[in-house]
Length: 385
Image 1: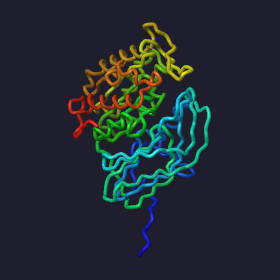
Image 2: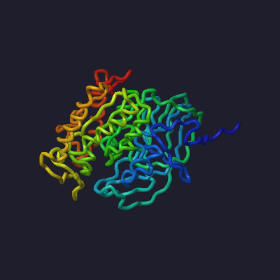
Image 3: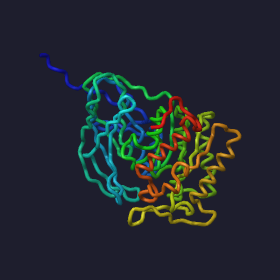
Image 4: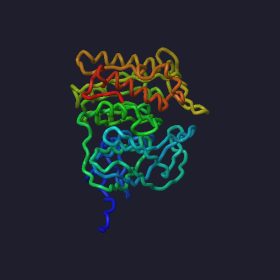
């Protein structure tokens, strides 16, 4: 009998595979690392913690169409664990035919321990192969979602069948946010709330969610301005409170400036501004908000009426949107507490971040209020997950 051909190695990036959700790639000696901001932003990123966030591929996926029953992805994964808590699952998810999700863990790469936004130590690891098998031999669409809270160096992709480029959904959604949108604790890349919403609404997600680093940076506004988008959402302010990086005097003008830049490129695109979800320690107190000895986040700042607490920030965000609304009918505001409020506080595992169940509810509520059949901007074919 003739010898059966072995798996084919495919070119990455490009070739027969579409890389969705990434705006840049960093070449290495052994592969490449997807990045979520364009190359021109690199010298503008001055904060070390932000440099750690841009290559963490939330929303980044390999999109292909194939008749292969098995795919193998050679990777080197850098995982990150908060010094106060166990490592959250680091998973690769293959979405097959738009519905079936096959998850595979990453276990062998570097493990970095993070304390106060800095890497305090690293346990070196090794490369590994992530294998998805039993996909079925018929033609189907496959998306391989990369771990949202790790850094992934992609080295090779092999398939035991034919592969052609996949097509992400036609309508494009750009979302900007903090760790509450980055969702390190969600359990897997398709279980972050933006990923859940994008899949339910049939949208091509570009996630600009940067844990600890949603500070209304001008280079992010310019990035959004220049991206194709059918809808844009901005979930802002909690990181400003966390680091006490702006004051009442400056927060409103900075938000106006961010919106001005986005509107320069998208004068009529639906644009939603979402205020922070509920956070007990920061509702009536300014930042900084820091971890105590147990790992819980505690706000340490001022409680006066002039303090930039979450209550005050929601008022300022709503005022900014209201002032602009007369001349901008496609601009809207959503109170973040409608997504996760005081009744949900039991799912804040560290006093600030939701657990996996909390993120699932945020996704369900966001979909219903924004993209669902009775939402702000219903999407064709949108169905609850």
